[in-house]
Amino acid sequence: CDVYSFGVILWELATLRKPWQGMNPMQVVGAVGFQDRRLDIPKEIDPLVAKIIRDCWQKDPNLRPSFGQLTNYLKTLQRLVVPSHQEMLSPHAPQEIWVNYTP
Image (tube, rainbow, N blue to C red):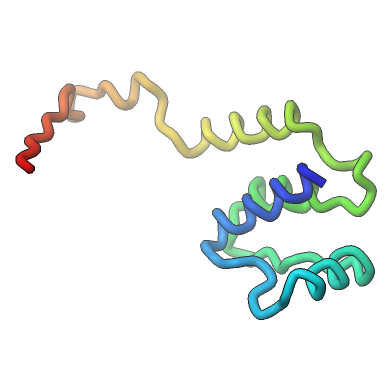
């Protein structure tokens, strides 16, 4: 159940939408639990993110990834998105950031 819910949270982050809009909690239980429905994953979503979400939503909980596996998937995704420390220290990047705050 927790991994499934984590998949829903990833879906929310990826789509910036609320899941099951317009449905009350009992309708969601019926749609997911009895009708085996899943949220639509837009084709614009990164394929790796879409795969992680779908894996979290496997009908058989034994086929869902563990949180350890999810951590590895997300680290892989992070490497694709976040520049390495060396790239961040390029000569063109500012070395320090100062913020002046006056209440």
